[in-house]
Length: 319
Length: 319
Image (cartoon, rainbow over all chains, first blue to last red; front, side, top):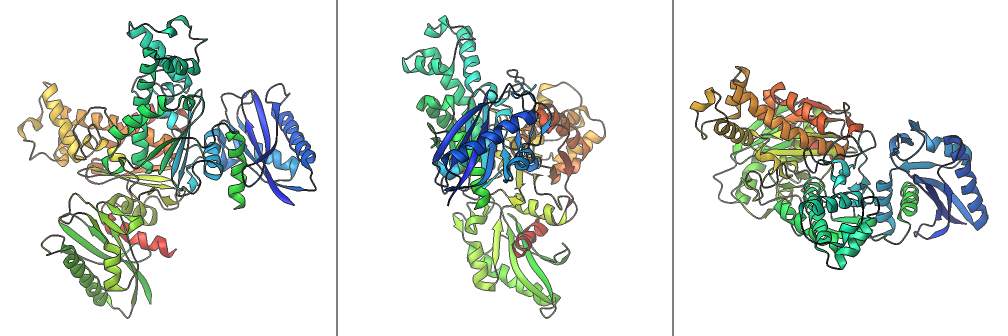
């Protein structure tokens, strides 16, 4: 019998379910809608059914399913629940682990997306063998998963690692969390869009981005413009890298990580974002840490990192 | 036989040696000069001699000495050494644990002052039973000791927890580390002095502090002036609390601690510093953490926290 675990990635629109081996091979992957269920319990019913279904499909006689790991927005490890996730239609505290275990008789653990990504990086990506590292997910927002002394930093209430909501600029840009100047309002796909529009307003430089409205603009378009030499787009990456680099310098002073990994849509810009971020991180860093901390693209780019990370949550427990 | 451990606090001028029980009682405490030794090895000889001497004094037949814990500037736990401590006359990497063990045949561990204070707080102070908390030492500079999931955060190279050298103001005040705008240039005894002088320059308000020169001014004088209603002194605490509060809000977002303890000279100002710090920390904090994190004076104030903390380093290991 081969051992496998289920890795579940719950997003606002879709939920992806994979069965993952100890080596990080995803044997099968399926998707169900996160929406259009009558209730949270109805969603759990559908999810549990799908897990049983794909386990049956690959052969229950050959694969022993050991547990179910879940990555979800606002997933709280300590209480096995999703709490007031902004992108989900069900509010309040959702005891997802208890509900899943009730239906599958399998152990279940939940954490937030960025923490799952950190575990995925540690088990299957670029952080293998590292005990102190940080993963930054640069998607629509900015998430971070922090591993210190070989363990996820989850803190007293399970919500630690919110680098995206540290203060990058006092009285700065309005953030969805209700505060102003949070790092994710600058260093994220949405942050880069806002920076492009700020630069288009402040500068008189010509730019192909002047023909695109706010709704249409994506960080991918900014990357393409930068690769074509568009100075507004290049300035936007410089501006983003400066703010992100300064906050990473702070983060290094607190955690002394061996490496910081960048993951997600904006990280696909590669050196356009890594080079300025690294340069400013080194400039503002406490001198004893200088030139010691690697800033790297994620080793899981191109793979389904969210599913692998959720699965790693169970593999870590088994070890 | 009662078990005891030695707690050593190495300062730039003096080194204090105490023998500490598991309950945190300091049975005997003596001091030797840190200076005026021919070499680092000569200092270690004197230190080892003093440890044996006080152990003999309280009765070797009644007390079994289990190990030697050391708190020192730039003490690096992972390598058992003091590395380039700015206040000590010996530079480079000093393998203090190996040297002590060679002379006493006892296990020895070293960490920096702020980490020792954190362990002292956890074993003998206000953080008993807490697994996630932070101690901020507001002395001449600002040190921090961070406990996450019951363990000190020391990071990849042993130097994590440098909150004092995070960026409070880009291109701000010059710091002894070579950077600008580090938090400790604002939130520390020296930082408050600098703030008072800035406010005396900017404002035309009368103040008793106008009659004191920079060399003479101490943070204690600022506290006394504030208690007497001096508006410049009160403004200095407000200014300090704002900068410290914003950086503590960041720190909460990353670590989600149960409590933050303030320790050291400036912390003796009590509510003069705690009230504005708490107010700004709450204002700039990621909303999910609001009104959850205690900001408290250290439970070790008045005790020899440095010696107790150094001793706790060994008690932790024994447990």
